[in-house]
Each structure stands twice: as C-alpha cells, then as structure tokens.
Length: 187
Image (tube, rainbow, N blue to C red):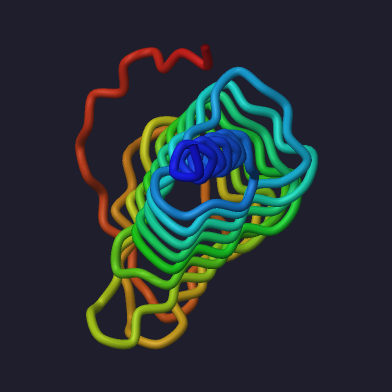
C-alpha cells in the first residue's frame, strides 16, 4: 500500500508538471503556440508559433519559426523565420533572419551575416552587425525600408530586386539581382 501511495503521488506530480510545461509561457525544450492569445513568450529552445497574438514580448533562445503572429517586442538568439507577422516595437536578433510579408513598425537590429526581407516593411533603420564575415542583406519583391541601412562592423552588401525601396546605406554597397516576384499573399 505504501508503494502505491508513492507511485500515485509521483504520477500526480508528473502529470501536473507535464501539464504546466505544455501551457507555460516560460519553457525549455520545444515551445509550440498556435491559434491563441498569450501575454508574453519566453522560451529556451526551438519555438514554433502559428496564428498567435502576443500582447507583450517574445524572447527566445533558440530558433523561431512564426507565421500569422503579432507581438510588441521580438528578441531572439537563434535563426528566425517570420511570415505574415507584425512586430509593433523593437526587434533584436542574434542569428539569421528571413522575413516574408512582415511589418516591423520600428527599426531592426540583427547580428548576423545573412538577412533576407521579402515583401516586408521596416519603419526605421536596419542595423546589421557581423564581426567575422561580410554580411549581406537581400531586399526583395516590394520590400520597403524607410530608414537607413547600417552595416556595423564588417562592410556589407545589399542585394536588391526591382520594386524595392531603401534609405541611405552606411558601410556597404548595393548590387542588383534578378528575381521573379510572384504575387505574394498576405494570408
């Protein structure tokens, strides 16, 4: 009987722990959010978000793949892939960034040697820091950057398709690239 009570207690504790880990906003391991509204997201591990409204900030240490989300601030240490997203305040990323159909209401700061913006709007400055390699910024298919592009550290290259607009460039150069830009859906 004594062993049964310990095992039941252990199962209850494990059940509660498991349930908390799934619904918690602070987590380690894989974090998954879908079709929900949360106050904030803090994850230590790969994070996947789809159709999520974050009232506050997203902080991730690990990769982030997000589609159809909105948040106030975005801070990630890892590779980021965003699609159909709205970030209303600051964005700081240490890792590669690929953004398609995204609106950054303020400037973005990325520490990486690779940033790709497709049909994306940045309302402010883009700062790219890469202390080791010469970084590149691909600006494609209707992307608009209202502020300057600053390559902080190594000089960078902006690879730009037709139909894009960018502000002044500091510590970098531009080159034209050809790409067929099909109608990109925002859904």
